[in-house]
Length: 474
Image: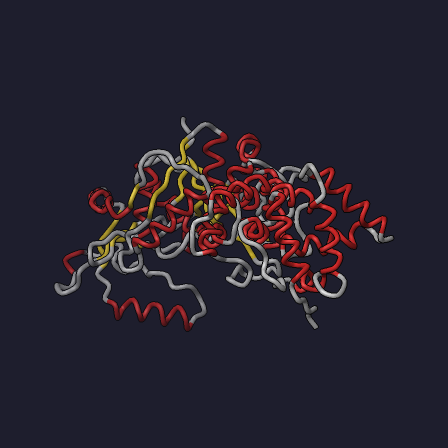
């Protein structure tokens, strides 16, 4: 039997972190077993499902590189199939027509509320003669669920979960307007798609008991369920926007790499010893459901940022260059010129060592594109260009201009010799030079920066900084 998993989001909003992790776990499980990972858009709620949300889900999964097998299944295209299954259940005596009026259902809800118990349908039409049906009420179709014993969910994460059948009423399969319910559609689609393993959030655990009853009524094979814990904020409370409960596209726009997101989402509720850095190939090899914990995972944006920094340092320079160029073009309001592009690519290895995100990378690399403002926006850099800074920069420029070779080693030797003559540490001169070249007090090595900028551009920036009237921020 081929392992087949599915991710089945409802397109009523963005692809959030919890959904992305569910998709990842399904994808990894299928890939681990050489099976199939399928995508189903559960868009039967036409009032709330939107094309924009569908695009956001597809774009988010594509960005995460969680490629699905086969065509996307849209649940709304299967309505006739769902209706046919309901008719078959009616004919087999496994379902019945319920003629309860809205007023009667409201009365049941109020009674349950007053008695402090969950609302459950009381089964009044379960065995009643249809001849008693009121002529002006369109019936809903309900499952004739077992009333005694219990339903057991053999869950790969939660263990065996037993629910008394008395707690599960006869659920609605088809509403009085002829539309199928979520519970019915999910079971039919999972069967028709050949789903062998249902991996989803633990908030669906009670749904599983009802769905198992329907699988049994249809005499269909029940998939293996695995209900994974929810994701909480770092303080242990329900995940919210203040914790980072954003759409996946927001993390893309914040400059995170997809491989870092996959690694981070993997570690939210799953572990392999003490391993933290787990690339995708290793994750596929190791992923098993018995390593999923039962406790809620805690989302920590700082950990994600640090993990992303690792993947930034490991990333190919050309790829980072291609990712950051559009960001720089947007900031400049124009395309980056060829010379600046070449400088940026040459400097990428040094730049990526200090970047946590692509946004950081863009911020830190803009000095290769345009000269820094004077005074710099960075207060620490502005302070370096005040006081004795301009005079030191002028002397450094003079020493550098005398060099025959514009390369890192002779440049460093020249600045070191100048510092020794003046009885200063190397940093006393290098830091003002850094501020003049980059507009920051932190950057790749200044000799690397000067070699990439070239003689003419470097000396021009140093001349600007040494001549500009500087005032340190107060």
